[in-house]
Image (cartoon, rainbow, N blue to C red; front, side):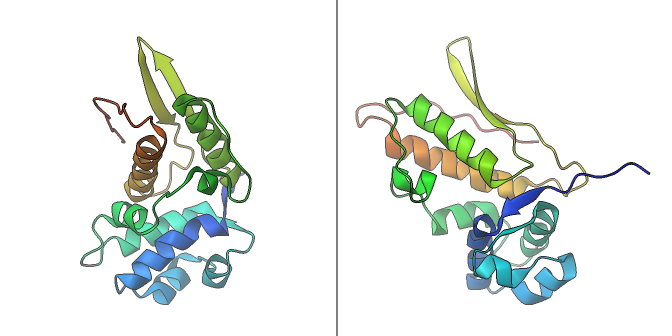
Length: 173
């Protein structure tokens, strides 16, 4: 029987979804128990957890009224207000927006073993891409929506005041 990889994510990265779902009235304890999400670890931001239970929790929570766009709402509830948040307590100095986004990609990859984020440039455009690793999970568009909204916040926060991209194209499977 082939061995499956267990993908892990820092429990602290799950906390925004739990807090937003709780604020929206989702019975988080019931859903966490149903999918095997260690709620106490997430609420205390302790250690790492399995990423698949988190994705399943988010998928179930998004089915509750008012939670259809849980990823987007979570990103709005927990905005990136300054670049220090990208590196927790470390200072992330960057000479350009591209360099800051590359730092962001590295930080995200260290937070989760299932992330393969990168910036790909060709024909004068830069694309933020992610290779899906967990294929047996639900579509995962809620976490994807969250990450895309964070990327938009980083661009808006860190782009020079006289420049913002004319277009930001977003796509997910």
